[in-house]
Image 1 (cartoon, each protein chain N blue to C red):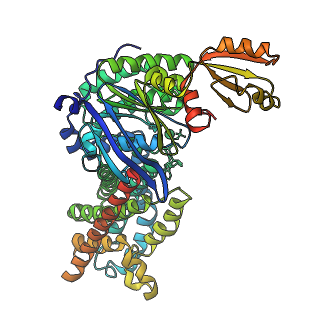
Image 2 (image 1 turned 120 degrees about the vertical axis):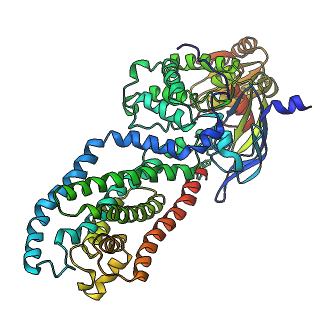
Length: 277
Length: 312
Ligand SMILES: Nc1ncnc2c1ncn2[C@@H]1O[C@H](COP(=O)(O)OP(=O)(O)OP(=O)(O)O)[C@@H](O)[C@H]1O
Ligand SMILES: [Mg+2]
């Protein structure tokens, strides 16, 4: 051990530390995430490729041949399902990046308590984690989009609208999941339950593969509450002009934005409570 | 007046923390001056960590006043924490990250530049004798090494106040002594130390002043020497007669010393001259199996104040 060079209280500029707190947490999350980069990329590219090879080529060809493109609003089957696939990719992408870090932060390694002892505030911790979750969602969605474009499944003009609707779904979902995870005291197989009993059904019952209205009415509410359905409907309208009234358009947008806002406003106080109790 | 007022870096008045109905810290008052090494001594559950967390401006007090570096923790937490170094009782390391990354990311939370941290991390690795382990995952370190890493991490922002919650738990004797030496040097450089411990030798070595806590309350306050002088005699004679004979022997001994404590395994006799008392006892025909004369310590102070042994 050598002596430390030390001038107590001089090294840190509190204003600067406080201003950029959320980004410092994001930086930390990216550092952790970068250790798993290969799996992010492998799943990000693998999923759309597998989908295109199976459902895309098989089911798509079948549907298109039978309907001549007329049954689904005059577009190819792939164009029809793309908004749902992309939104669900975004949801999957953000999911891992909010739930696991939040559990780790409060329950497993309790790293949030170490971060909370620095100049960073509980809210900045939540924001930092959310920021990287959205980045991960963005990366996953972009990879999916790239593959769809590459295989000619969607036209280039769909890129921007579908990126927007997917990220809205991702944000709404991430915020709600963060609010829930912030309330967990232990894992208890919660995430396995979420992915089996929430995400999987949501994927099947949100008008993903055929319009929601074709479902029995008693199953349709699953779609109504699911961010996936709202994002999918929006995506279909914005990418290939599926008919929609302005009111519905605003409703879909409003619902997704509301999920995000409600999720975050339930997240912040819980973070503060757990870190400052 | 202004000069002295400025010297107080931590001030607590009727500081209280309740968890639901349970009172963990029960209206304590104390002050810590700049550059001082201040100790919180007490048994398990005394409220030491709870007090530390309130000072560290992470845990909100239930009532009372608290001022850290002249600021109010409830509203100025981030500003206060920018100048504190915290070594929590549980290390709270990031086990996924490498040793150097634990130091680096922690420094980034304080907004320190990468350039500054490049040197700082090396310096701290050296300080904690972990230079060879820099590329290991924190999870792969031994318990004592993790402790040292947690201590180094608490120094990354060059804090004005360094808070150490049982810093040497899990350290081997050599590492303990090296750490004591390091902390002493930090103090010389002007760092204020706040230390909790159940080790009285640690408290005696490190602390200029300390409070003895039990059940959320302060039992006594002063320098180690003052406390020993006030609450104990100069010397202590420890006698063992064998577990079932201690009680009987104590009956015969109780008038010979200033004070007597009967513990399950031994009898403590408080006196000014231990050797003389021992001679007197042996002359009286009592034959202890073992005997030991030692100086009074904070352990004795604690026993006197609470009727309980510090290390249970
Ligand atoms: N988050 C909490 N919720 C409820 N009770 C708590 C909480 N934290 C501490 N306590 C209780 O407050 C009391 C004081 O705990 P504290 O951790 O401050 O003790 P301590 O003096 O640090 O003990 P030790 O030497 O074992 O570390 C204990 O009875 C403990 O159970
Ligand atoms: Mg403790």
